[in-house]
Image 1 (cartoon, rainbow, N blue to C red):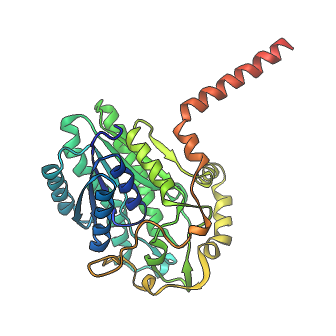
Image 2: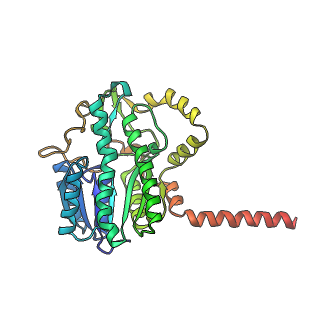
Image 3: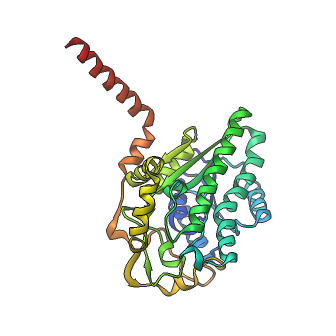
Amino acid sequence: MAGNDKVVVITGASAGIGREVARRFAVRGDRVALLARGESGLDGAADDVARLGGTPLPITVDVADADAVEDAAAQIEAELGPIDVWINNAFTGIYAPFTDIEADEFARITEVTYLGYVYGTKAALARMLPRNRGAIVQVGSALAYRGIPLQSAYCGAKHAIQGFTESLRCELLHDRSRVRVTMVQLPAVNTPQFGWLLSRMPRQVQPIPPIYQPKVAADAIVYAADHPQRREYWVGGLTALTIALNSVVPGLLDRYLALTGYRGQQTDKPRSPESTRGNLWEPVDGAGKPDYGAHGTFDDRAHDRSFQLWASQRHGVLAAAAAMASGAVAALRRLR
């Protein structure tokens, strides 16, 4: 499913990872539907796509509204054609201990970050299943496997996406459908979110290193869209290590994160004015507001490549090479 003027839908396309993913598809000449709430960010994303050779369709939509997502899907097919790829990426969150989060805030994060994926997937399947083709990419996180302090609502939503996607994948396999669903588990990425997510912490929040540039995440997501037969892709060595350790010594990680999780997610600077309001209820890149683009403020600390992503994309080749090496060692031992 590489290039060739595909119709691609990206939620959360106005900034950060979604913005960079849109640019990647635009370079290939694809038709890109951009879904988000922020008008300034959407306008900037549409300009990016057009400048890079794609065809943009910006749509202002709140993914927590199932009817609005369905209406957006209908508009996309009417204006761009049949949807080939749907990428669920939109999210929101809050940095605070669980006891400091209001019930309506927790519900809002769950509706956007988890149910937004459910509604997007449902709208995509309603169109892909009758055609028996298409790919759905769920943008996940290492936090889909391992919860960390100060992000209980976000971690809960990512865990829910993981379970939902596994269940759906089994159903598609049962029905022998050619529609594929895959998930990309990401590390910390240098996006604007750390400056605008609602925070009740005393200092400015930051991603837990190592941090990667948005291009690394975007490359992984585009590759997953082109190769959705793999059930998951892991990006970043820490992502793979975290998932592996959590399956073996989760109690040890509990204690480690209890000691380091608060300090490691804050800088030594006071929190930004934007983070005291956050983007739970209103977009920070709405009409008349700044367009934040794809990058955050951690360019000087962010990596622009991931060996783990390279290995994840070549899983079969590396497994075969490992098997051959193991066989060669066994043969040498027998000769000796």
